[in-house]
Image (cartoon, rainbow, N blue to C red; front, side, top):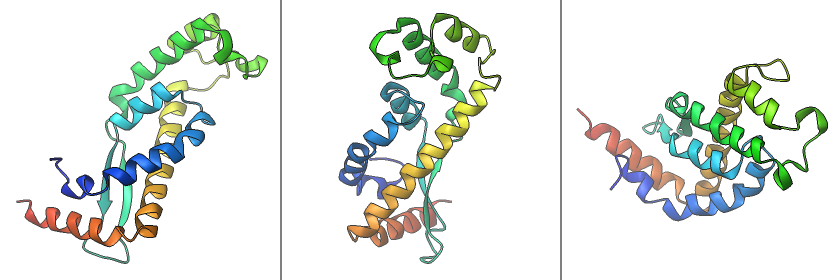
Length: 158
């Protein structure tokens, strides 16, 4: 059983949102492998579970910094491989070997800080996922039950 018993109640809903979210991830800057890593580092919480009107499902992304180097490695490996995965990219973001090396060294070809940009993009995408999951739970009539379970588990803590 998880630390958050309410999460155990919504496993099927998470799987459904995962399937629905696949296209959104493919349209993002992350590969499915990177997204899996991001989701592993993300914990979902219900903020203000004792207040039905204010309760909200949120993505806790505090642990993202721990996986950012691995995200960059995955990006560098896929960029070094080139091929079909690079075919849809524009010439200014080819992601080739040189760009991958520059990115790994902190010299983003677009002049931005790839790590900060990746983290911000990951935070935005996980927040969008949390919103979709909450919308699904509300639509399926499961939100109140999850919120109440979260409130109960919060009150059980010392």
